[in-house]
Amino acid sequence: MTIRSRAGASVLAFGLLLAFAGCTPGPDSQGSESNLSLNIGRMKVSVMPEYDDPSVLVIYDGRFADAPRYPIKTSFLIPKGSVISDACSLSHEGQHFCQLYRTVNRGSFDEVSLVLPYPNFYLSFHTPRLDTGIETKAIDYRIKVNNPVKTLEVDVQQPLRSSAFKVVPPSGATRSQSDGSMSLIRGFHHEIYKIENVAAHQERGFRISYVKKDPNPSVDIKYTSAAMRDSPARSAPYETQRNVKTVIYVLFGSGFLGVLALLAWYLRARKSSAGNKP
Image (cartoon, rainbow, N blue to C red):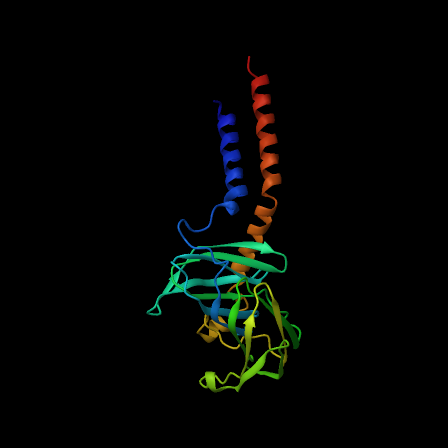
């Protein structure tokens, strides 16, 4: 094989790797139970706008009803373009066991699939960025579950230094708490609601509005010194992950066309090389 042919084969192999890297199987689920027939007994959704990033930090925390055996395969729906921080299963002692996961776009949602070795789950993520240039914020956070939930608790946290905070829950939601007792150290105010017997694939929307004049998040967990906080080169903590995710979507979305282009180039190169042989 000539040098040109070897180079072409290498490029083609690299292109195939890029195109199909996003289609590899998720975590090994051999022998695990399907989640389709399982109920979630309790699920808490914590919604924290502009907490540590100019986006919404969301945490899904709950427990599946007892299955015949574990591990189980399951999936959760989160807002499209969200950046996942943790996808974990919790042991009976409360230890977090982070799991491999796979995301697939489902329209306005991303579906996160993983295998849980224990019935308790913990999923945290940041939604796409909010427009911090607008003082009056309006967020329509929609919750959609793949499994029936006996009790869904939604805790909406008001950003610090904001005013006119208001939460409009969906029909059937009852307010269970409205104070700052859960976060006295930082002074956060919470609006907490409960919804009983949520059916699978049913959407429930919470409309959140408030006024916030400054663009800074409530807490800054990445930068501790004043020099770093005031640096003009400072970027949002999760901006890099968002940019990487966008690039991956573009690469894998156009991966098939890229493979065809590489294949055509390789065949032309081989034909040209064969024609130039004495």
